[in-house]
Image (cartoon, rainbow, N blue to C red; front, side, top):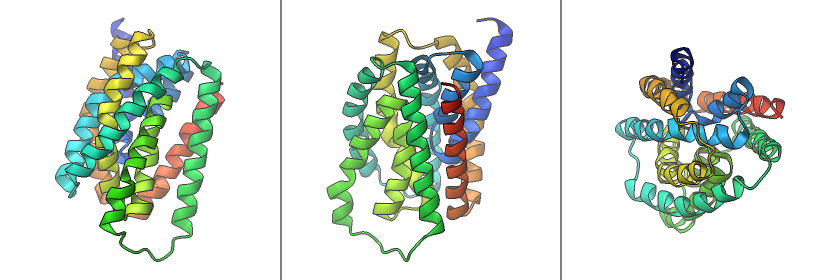
Length: 251
């Protein structure tokens, strides 16, 4: 890859890493539509290339969130174990779909999630601490669902897990974002293997973005912990709407 293109991908990685650290999504949710629109990649190639950047970013992000929050590592292991299997099979399915159909589904999914989160913040009700047994009884569903979405869309698991963990399990926004990163990490490896086998990964671009992203992730995580929970959720909603608009516009 030419030097100019490498520098360009590195700078994009810095921006993606900052967003990923702030919202706990690995940066792929903004990287995918940008790669489609600016570099004319197919949806599958954009998702596969973004996974290269996301793997080290997610691991660093989780470590930073873990240092600032009391994240249950047993819960993280359970979510990761249940997510990784469904991620693999969903990624195989994604590579059989048309690029336009996959992009439209991804954009629609982001719109629904953002609308739900906005409604939840604006119509909040008194919350009660969930029962611990309920947490362990049903938490595997978060992993299974997150794995399916991660395999299909490359980033869906990190998008749906935080609202599920805050709504049903009473976690803070930042703790939920950290746990979501732990959940998707093994699945990223599985999905990347599938996309690579299908020839849907631009390795040089992904690696250049990964280096830039690693520099910016700590800044995003620090900013997330300075914002109040509701403000961070509303910013997350706007972030999802922006990403969905770019994805749908790229059809």
